[in-house]
Length: 484
Image 1 (spheres, rainbow, N blue to C red):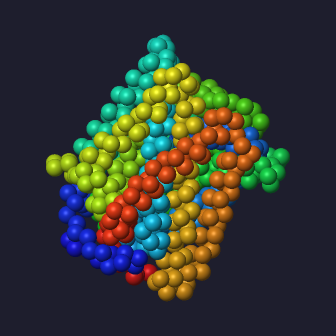
Image 2 (tube, one colour):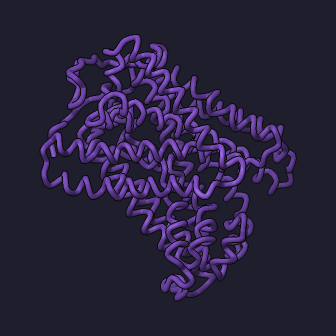
């Protein structure tokens, strides 16, 4: 169908008929995409310990404050998502007020973010597969060569799922994450039963928590939410996307907030002190022993494997669809806009993501680096991409409300945008200052390098064909754009 570009689109006409499985993904599957991308269980495995190291008994409270900042960003995203449906996620949403150049930067930063997060998570998949087999007496899979091979096998499985069916990919990712979350909740409840007293006066009174410590913990907490907006990439394939996508974004953010706060409170309770939790590299291993269910350690390894794999699948879905939309606009090579004839997925764009996701993880792991260190390093590069995209969408939201002349929403949008921008700016600042030790100190420059690849490519398109460059972000269904 022919669609008129929205405000900021300069009247460009685009013809749809993309070949994707339009209106095929139901509300649950849309929500599954966002939840899988956040991967709450993977965050719960290590996040609370890092939070306790800085916020002491105020760690659970830091999650609540961080959640408020994330909710502000979610509000800004949904001002667009309830008016526009697209394969382009934040890339297409930002176009409604930022114009082509900043729209492209928003989308490309998100592409760098999801590819890096997928790569870091891939290393986590291999690690926990190795941990599971080690728990049953097969320790050889923990060796670098085997870890690299496991990563290559699992990225192949992820490619199969994402190409053969967007619905199957979403359901598999959701099922894996639900299994992992269920295991963590069961163990947490068993810890509460074993402890016998759910009211911890030290945590409820925020004992030992300082304002600086809680603020530092908030920075860690914010990073645990990245990817909650992932459902926006399924705008063209979702049934009733104008309702399903905003709901999915809120559900993912709220679910993560509740789980993180609950799990952190329980972990401190189970360890007996915040300082003890902060020094444990594998808190869930300790907690299954404390709860008297040591036999569940192997199941927990399967759960964490599932969670990291769900992230890989979800991130590939986003990257493939953003590139698909860019290709349909003429900004990326035409092949990227090719949909699989029978599966109706952006198959070529998904195949291109494979080496970009696999090479960093496989190369670093094969070189003898600890897989979870690789996860930390590569994920950090991805986080910068998400932060830049979130910051730009916060700028875009109130500008969009000004275009719609919605006085009530303008005030709320500016309030949410300011909160979101402060959270993103401070989080970024704390990531680079004081300068962390190597290799964390070079990661911002790696992100900038990845960002510049896209910017230079876009500049080339603009110099060669300005009219095509101006289409950035216009490949979308602009449904109810002027509605409240």
